[in-house]
Image (cartoon, rainbow over all chains, first blue to last red; front, side, top):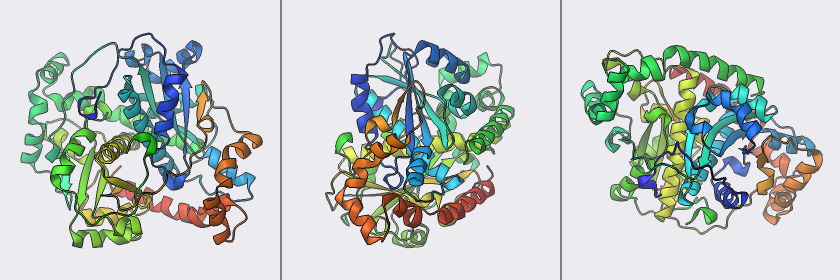
Amino acid sequence: MDLNNRRTIRKFKSQDVSDETLRPLFEKAFRASTTGNMQLYSVIVTRDKGQKEKLAPAHFNQPAYANAPMVITFCADFNRFTKWCEQRNATPGYNNAESFACAVLDATIVAQTFCVAAEEAGLGICYLGTTTYNPDQIAEVLQLPKLVVPIVTLSVGYPDENPSCSDRLPIEAIVHQERYKDYTKEDIDRIYAEKESLEENKKFVEENHKENLAQVFTDIRYTKKDMEFFSQKLLDFIQKQGF
Amino acid sequence: MDLNNRRTIRKFKSQDVSDETLRPLFEKAFRASTTGNMQLYSVIVTRDKGQKEKLAPAHFNQPAYANAPMVITFCADFNRFTKWCEQRNATPGYNNAESFACAVLDATIVAQTFCVAAEEAGLGICYLGTTTYNPDQIAEVLQLPKLVVPIVTLSVGYPDENPSCSDRLPIEAIVHQERYKDYTKEDIDRIYAEKESLEENKKFVEENHKENLAQVFTDIRYTKKDMEFFSQKLLDFIQKQGF
């Protein structure tokens, strides 16, 4: 799968992904850029049926989770580096927001590089957005210590479907030259026109008895109430982990 | 440059990177996974000498910034999506931490996919860690509205150096099976042994008159005082942008 034609995979064959297959993917992923070469991440592989079942509620047992042979959780990790400092008579100061930001970037960069390598190798992946919803439950199952926060969970396996590429906004809608050019009413109409005109999206609106696609997002998929609930949960958990 | 041999580039030829070269890289990058297909990011290209000079202090005018023909700033952006919702009689609820987290992941995933595509195309990149230090100054120069926060800045250009790969921790130090296995004293010694034994790192310790490599990090490169200062600045700015 090349970068132009990649598709998220939500249906996987039952076939396991071996350690021999995974290792070179991790090797590639860990070559990615990292803040000051500190490698502020850890990766947890979940294959065991019991563990996967315990983790399921945190991911709302969504189909893309349930039918994957494995998931991999990428964590922001300042625990290992901090332990190293403490053991070397060096005083770490990494229990704060800036350190957390560095570790989040590191973990995400590695996760995405893993995805590119995995897709090149014929695997399929799906990002589970639930990771930032329920980091507390995930941390409990994976036994994450302080200064470790789960950031990205990927379902990984051999694809058992061949979906078409999903739509994207026009490039001009995303790329700004020199300065951010804020969007006029006309810009917004133009940018979202194609998305709104797609048959699958029209069907989506109809099925949900909404006036338009934007309302499907605000009233059903990503509601203010949910986002505020998960915000508080996320902030509490980050603080609990010591950042 | 394949993923196994990639190197960060800090010295660039003066040659410009054309829009014709950039466009297919953005096309690839924007195919990457994004939360609910919301594409919660914007990208700002800085080539203009005047703009690049104004942005320089925010990046401490570091050599990897100064000698690059261009930089690209990847922003977490809920402004565009929110405007769309408002224009469609839909009530957005995206001025909170969970929404910010989604947009940070989206922006970082796109930035890293851009890096992979750029390196494949013979370009070199360098992540500038200064973006989370001085997001306020960057936002001012790039005129970022509310709900837009700069997350990643990349120096981009044709490489004018051929550095060797930097060291990485052993894979076993990063990957955990089923559960996070916290590090014992012996684990830490073993994991960091190779890094500590490298000639370049020993030289680094000596030049900085420190006892060991960890102290170079805690006392010089990433001090508690700096991290706390930039934490407050970052948190204040995220709040100012409305998240």
